[in-house]
Image 1 (spheres, rainbow, N blue to C red):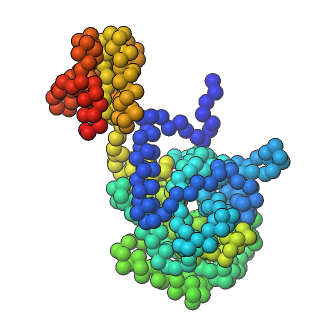
Image 2: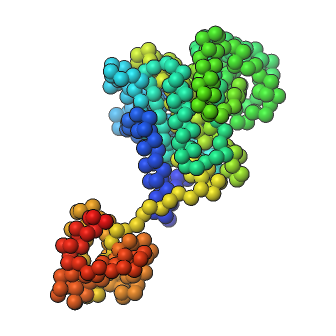
Image 3: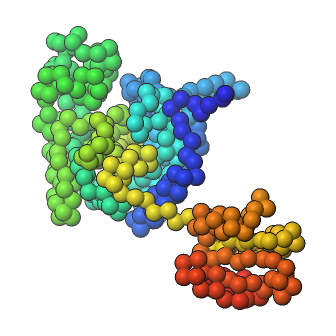
Length: 420
């Protein structure tokens, strides 16, 4: 039997309402912050991710789904959303937009070949936001404020926001030199990935899942001590503005994030809920200065974050928060004869074209079974069509909550349902 590919999942109707509710709320919040939706292709040139995400990252080296098309071009299913958005910003010359920063959001599937874990899949859905075109601590704070707003709007309480500054490129270069000096004498004690990164991207050693408990990682130099004055002032301003908004946070000097394009503010949001799992990260992001230039674009900077809807659902479950199921029919039409079934089909057509959700029985079941079906489908109203109803061209509209009935002609019923 052909089964769903490993690391993917079917989201069945009994669960899909959760996704619909979450995606709708995410889009509403994004629009409240004046972010507009962008939709980029599901696959891009492989070179986009190699250049933007970084050749030394696990994403590029181990996790990308890459293939050759019939034109012998190397294409990759997108593993993350920032690089495609940056590519679109450059290609569509958004730097010339009157309004800067350009504020964008997306809801899209991503693809990474990684070991399946609880809440982590090889195809997963990300909601992400990007603000490109302005370097200002206030934009960083806006992004962090939106991030907290999103999770708190779902009722989550066991949250921990962790931030750090990776500094500008000058600061990063000085810090990388210090890390090479720190790790080199004992780099043989680390995994093969860390050994290869010591001269390509030593900051990634701090983010290694295998060696995170090594004493040299715990005692590594702090990024903050290598920030130049401009980077320190930027970070201090971000923290001061967060304090003004009463947004709680913790500083983690080892937080570097997993992609090469981050500079200045980097952050992660974690869940402290019991039963959430060993991997506590819900969401992450940061500022990226130089990314667009690296892609032959303009000298513009941006900041953003991305969250996994799968992990958001896990966090809600860990805190016992139910997602409301708003699914339900406006009207269920029960039928007692073949002629009534034909009439029901015509009536349903008119109702649905007026924006009224309606359904009927298609298995020719007894009336009692049809009423049970109406209950299962959470119908707000029902009517029963039989010989008398056809002859009189009217039926009793029943409120399934109150039991109240009202006799209406079929045309009156359509207008009444519209009013309801």
